[in-house]
Image (cartoon, rainbow, N blue to C red; front, side, top):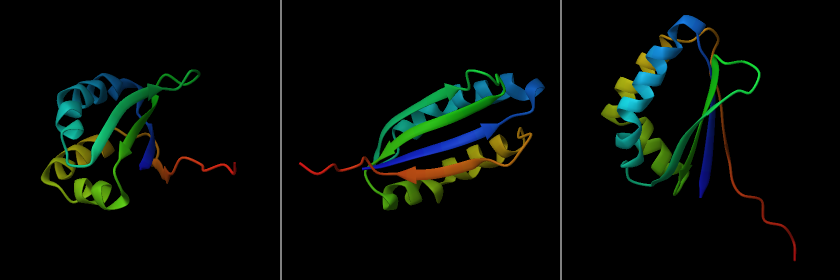
Length: 98
């Protein structure tokens, strides 16, 4: 499993547009092959900062989504609302020794 976190700093006045865009597309993203989980977080101290938190079967599944027509619509529309560049990273659950 691959966990993807994307931190989005939005222009404060454009937050309602972003929330509508997320609401309009979240179910479609969840239905992408390999997507197991998607939620939206809001920063506790900066109300115009959000993070998407998603779980994917693999990096290949995430990359398939990133090459999809849906991503080709959602990402440019989201980027247009930014006050600063996004910060994205992928992680795996840690495996601790027994």
